[in-house]
Length: 145
Image 1 (tube, helix red, strand yellow):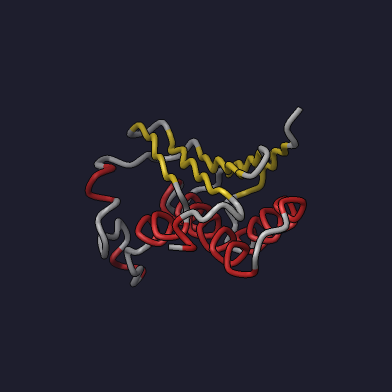
Image 2 (cartoon, one colour):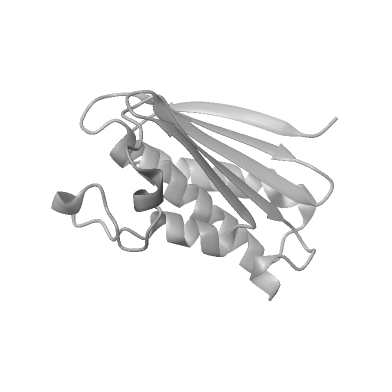
């Protein structure tokens, strides 16, 4: 059986750091390098921040962080049941932001894609968003080449 976990927390900004640390602790048994650890924490942080800031837009909601370990791979699933993304292709473009009034950089998906081996996004307007992040640890993924 693969190791896995599921956390649910309110969409409060302080929970972004909680999610980062939960992800970091979870992958320790795969013995990641410092670079792999940093990349995973950053990618999870970006996905959780998107759920907190964009998912619910000024209303309370729940963010779910799930993780699963395989032999040399970790998969994180970050989801919300908020507003959804109207145009995923547009949202994934560098510098695009759905919250320009907040002076957001629009680099969240770009960062996730740079640091993870696989990034999948599922969203439905008014039905929430799910981001799936996958990375191999110690096997020469994107971070090594």
